[in-house]
Image (cartoon, rainbow, N blue to C red):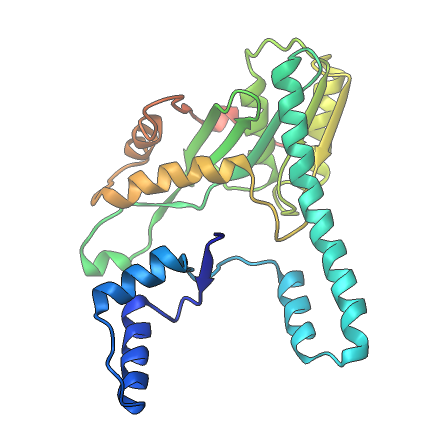
Length: 282
């Protein structure tokens, strides 16, 4: 039986209280909480979903419009909604097929995904007053090899550079630094952030890589906004899972060491970006 999810506002304890109140109102005996729990989870396969975050604004709008739409307009809205979801799933299908093709034929093309992780606060302290003081932010750009599953992490504190298009392009250059390529086609996936990924600086980077002879063709794919869960996000989840367990982080160098050891297998390769590594577009 497929698993069914109840709303995040509910829990087994809350549902059992409602069930017991109804039994009392109808003057009938209620089953035990343990039997109720086993029936709910095992026989009916009911779970409880966590509230969604960072949802797609277009999907949210369609869902709200469908709830309030007149009957004659529902079919049109549902068709447009399905078309939007179709575009979103097509990007994931492309990423999957491109990755599988590189695995089976490495000479065909090279597939990467790149993204900037949520800034890491330095220092990370447990005392209350530390929450309100100004932090030094540590930045991390992941360039993920979609065929091997490995990733290079380019990290630096905000005292070295910011986190704009120049920095993103410089991190991608660093990824290819010393990397011997056996293919002349690059396929890159990223989100639609205009200030970092979808701009003239990144186009200039692709032109530079082509002019230097690294590639003959570069394809940059942008999944639909709001549906850009890339392999980098799984890498960041591995890192953040470890960071949450660490009470104190005092320097960016400690973060870099944490990232190196975040995985037991297929560990991340970490490069500390310096001011000399940041290439200005001018």
